[in-house]
Length: 393
Image: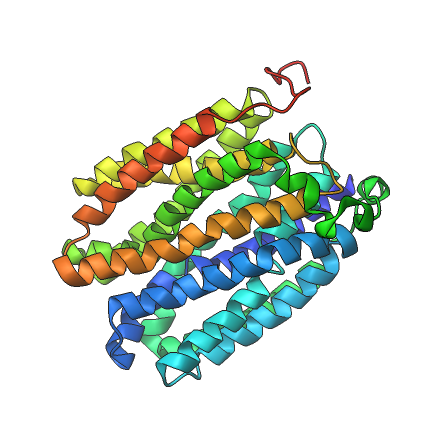
């Protein structure tokens, strides 16, 4: 069996753990934390943003490390620190320590999530990069199935005890999976000496104008995605939807996104990646209108497919501009710039809700953000030598 398949499977399961316990699962803890700790929505939202802030700061460094030392070491380290951060979060009793635990959690997650796993997979596949990325990111998407499980555990044992269980699961399952990740010898042979590239290998990335256009698009997209993921259950509660039903609806978002991750990932291997990426942005635009009107299930379909598809196509599109020497660094820098949007979005939504008692104005703002994100993709200049149509590949 091609060892790339082992990489995909292992990476998908690691993504499942990180997605369920670090990313999607936070919305299930949101109201329980507010009720016990007495924090405002804005303060709890900011904790989630701190996770994005540290991951954005560390992203270029993680990209450099994965290009230099490989994905296995980073994945093992990331899983261990993430598990520790999750458990420490359960011991917090004040806002400063609550934020500190989130920073540690983000530090670990940066070593075992998107940048590391995507780079590893891209280096193992040439012709089916979009599909391979879609498969790994689908593991992240399936982690949404953990939301109802987390809600059940919180209701039965409490939110702190649930965090202890999640941290232990991260260690017991994640560490063995990380050990399976190996480097593709061909990709390693392409890597030159980073010293000659300048600035730790970031010089050719910074010189690519299209990179910054893509970063602007991802900045706006992250504002929307991060806000929806963190605020979806509070939003549903504000519409009068009962908590257990809200958790089920929230879990549908990542699960349904598998359609976009696989579907658009496959399309990115066939058609022009820039236009394929733009279509995913249009899906997100339409979804904001549905959410603004309270049409929950049409929102879930359009948002999930567009959001999931954007993840798969983004990684494949980036591979048209950067090879194995700089791909990890490029993805890390892109994630760093984009994650700033993820830091801004949730607290902004929380402040608007605290002031207005409604999410309607939030979703209206993000409708326009989705439009700007799509427009940025459409003005991307194709790198010289890239093919207009990928069917011949």
